[in-house]
Length: 486
Image (cartoon, rainbow, N blue to C red; front, top):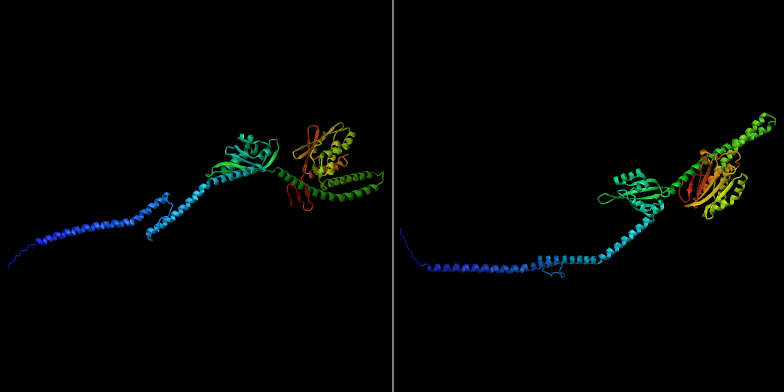
């Protein structure tokens, strides 16, 4: 084994290695600088359009931009630009609409206000001219509103109604029904409907249909009660008259059938009784009994004739008449008959009574029958007074005469058919006079004015309701009231 030692000078090689390292360091640093510059340049090239888009978006958002964005290449930036342009166009259209609304808003508000005022005027005119009562009640019972029909119908002024908190309970519905309104409308929030009789300021009793409804707010809290009241007084009167007419028709039919059934046997009995009486000797005691039978049969026949006379149909022939002229035309005959009995007749009938419609002949007959009956019921030295006046749409005729013999039951049966000694044909015509008054749409009442006087009150409408009866099926028609009985 041996060792070899080689000695070589490496200074040149080491120097080259140092230079090489320096060159590589410089090249690396230069490459990094160049790369950084290139990256910055590329970034500036790509970020510039984005900055422009951001700037233009801010202008669009602030509303200062009007022009569209410049077109970009068909890349993501171009798609974003087109989307922003669509949004800008839409915003400009909406802004134009808003500006147009702003320009026409005042005109629209003015037109809408005019429409509301017109609608309110129409509603108020409708409420004020309705032929029914419209009212509003507050929760404390105060009447807040009534239309003019309330004053026209009941006579109370709005000041009287509104100033009195308890007016509705005291004058309209009473305490009990007032509490029903509170419990139904104010407690259960439900409608309230009833028929009530209300006394007007001048003392008339009027019938109404009252329909109340509660008014609530958005929270279902009660604000007030609104309602209407329909006056059905005339309808009630027509219904009662129609029912009374139907009852009279039925009773008249029964009476007529009964009278006809009695007349034939009575005629036979009367004939045989007269033949029996004539066949008996004059001095026979049996002849007196036969005379009594003949007289009583004749009395029964007179009663049957009275019944048939009282229920026979009465059909007035309507024409223009004057009540004053009818009374004046019969006064001379009545005064002549009264003078024979030492009775005085006084008349107070205004000449300016309005014309009405009726049958002159029938009314004259009815008035004269009543007057003759009054003369027969008046004692010698008495005085009969006749008065007439106008009340609303009716003519009131009153006959007052002294009489002490008629009791309460006699007054109730004043017009009932009856046979009285010395009454003659008046007994037949007295029931018919009441029928004639009723057929003219009127009303007749008999009452005692004081301890000595009898008052006959006749009420005739200026425009009577025309009644028609059909004997076949019993229908009753009212020309003005439209009430029918099938």
